[in-house]
Image (cartoon, rainbow, N blue to C red):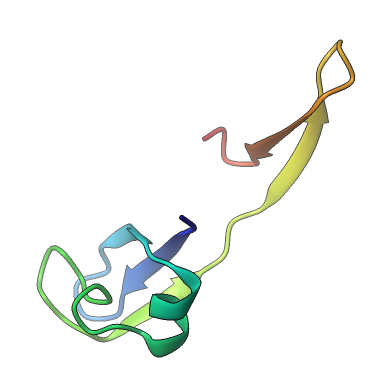
Amino acid sequence: MPTYSFICQKCQNSFEIEASFMEFDKRDPKKFYCPKCGSRKIKQIFTEVFFVKDNKGKNNIRCACGG
């Protein structure tokens, strides 16, 4: 299931939400809120992703932030 990154516009907490594409499209209120303060005023943030080839020629997805 995809993971989406968000930041709370109220308390500035950054967090991730794991949700299906359908839940994401509908912004299911049971999942899309700040886990720290409970606010629903959240904004999606995007992180850089790049591919790294290992010595066996396989593609591995890595986050540019080192995750």
